[in-house]
Length: 84
Image (cartoon, rainbow, N blue to C red; front, side, top):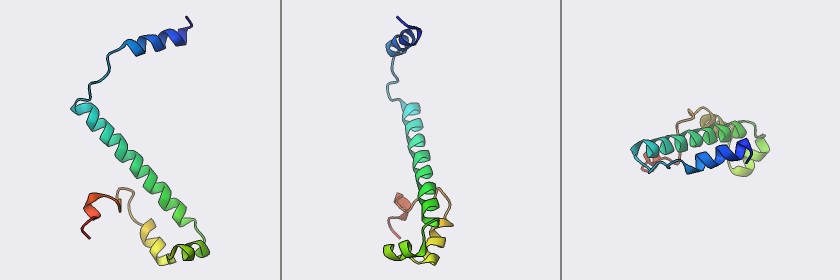
């Protein structure tokens, strides 16, 4: 058995986390961080769009600037924004 395969066999034999509170907290935190990264990337892409593309989407440059100015944690799909 090669070294890498031996390490994999040992890791595979280790007990798995049972989804306790710590692992679910970390999973939720990781999911949130990934969403923030996604939002920041989407806003960067919006900022680079030409006016013609914005017009096709029904957005003005002012709409774009307002969206791009939002902080990365301000998620329009979060539950906090549902009742606005």
